[in-house]
Amino acid sequence: MLIPLMLSHLLLDTEGKAHALQNDSSCGLWISDALDGSRVMSVSYNSCYVFEWDGNYFIIVGLEGTDAAEQKVLHEEKLFMCPADLPALDAPSSSVCSAVRSQDRLLCASLPISQGDCEVRGCCYDPRDKVKTCYYGNTVTAHCTPDGQFSIAVSRDVTLPPVILDSVHLASGRSAGCIPVVKNNAFVVYQFPLSACGTTFQVTGDQAIYENELVASRGVKTGSLGSVTRDSTLRLHVRCSYDISGTFVPLSVQVFTLPPLPAVSQPGPLSLELRVASDEQYSSYYTDSDYPIVKALRDPIYIEVRILQRTDPDLVLVLHHCWATPSINPHQQTQWPVLVNGCPYAGDNYQTQLVPLSTASGLLFPSHYQRFTLYTFTFVDSASQEVLSGLVYLHCSASVCHRSVQESCASTCPARARGKRSAEHTLKDSASRVSSKGPVVFLQNELRQVADVNDFRAAAASWALGFAAVAAGAVLGMVLVAAVLWWRK
Image 1 (cartoon, helix red, strand yellow):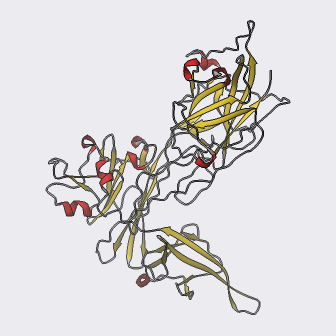
Image 2 (tube, one colour):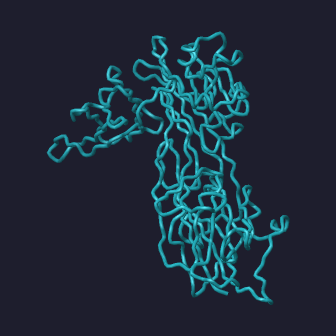
Image 3 (cartoon, rainbow, N blue to C red):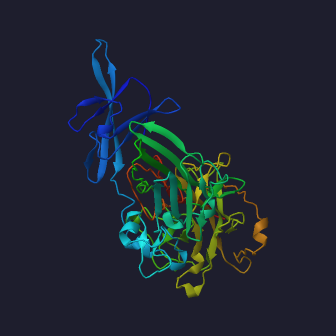
């Protein structure tokens, strides 16, 4: 954690007594100065200043100043919380091991090796496999070797959707000696000296600390009105600590996620309704109590727009445009098209899929419905390529057509002609405009494995269709509120 240099900082122990903020290795506290003038505080989980409650660890930092009478006064207190420490070098769970297919296994240690020695390294053991008896589990496995090497193995399934292994690299770049030593379809393994590949070094108390980062690049798709990505964001911060005397100190790894975001709704009277089906057969739909609907990047979302309270079989619902914006304003400049002139936006690498309807669908009035499948994404700043924070809203413009001999109300989307359609669209003002009465929420994807180990910090961020809060090294989530704009012909 970074603490600005201002006034005087102190720590409060579990009894509320104040202590100066200074190195105290006997109590598991190390203080160092950052390049920007801040102070970096490293605290072990068993520190004298740390207390545990409900599976989390807490530490209180105070800000002390002097009043007009030159008396010391506690101006402010800040509570910091970390999740419970879960040693990553413990034997992995059976699901972590069984999830790895035999053809994807990579050796974690050379043979022969006992089950105990294999599991101490945080790896999986299968005595039936005579070739790869000790192999990496479906998670992040990291070691600091006694001969001064980083060793980090990353599973593609550590994020959801799976991280693209070709995009994973050291934050310092891909220079010689800093590329994967082993890679297959499921894992990428890095091994490099502590003194190489942009590793930072500092001495804190009686410990030498080496730190590096693994990150994953994101593929960004840019349109005329906005940019999106469907790739997970991965950032692993690796810290190796050694006693200055030379005694090896175990590596620790920690992965943080954000809790799901609350639902957001936009109530209002409706003549049209937009709702989300729970399966591709549209056999059931999410209700108010089901929100937020949790989905990962690239996951399909089954959308339905329908006419309400009408029984005329000659009415035809026509969708014109559907698009997403990072605010409730449908006219916002930053947009991502979903449907353009009733057809999937051709500039998307995960094109929206229209669902044809007929009497065989079992609907009483099939022409009163429009269905399509949308694949979740998140907005990205076109200039900086950074993921944008905030809510994301889906808008659709529609009209109701009356079918007759002269008007079929039918439209087609030729497979290749769609690419010629413009992504630009203009909202028409009209006397009748309605919004969806319930929210459609696309929330963060989850890390499949969350691991913790003392003194190593790994933050892997995975993305879903949106985001509303940011925490250090954590996942961003997003809420998509669906709105329908309706005008009459």
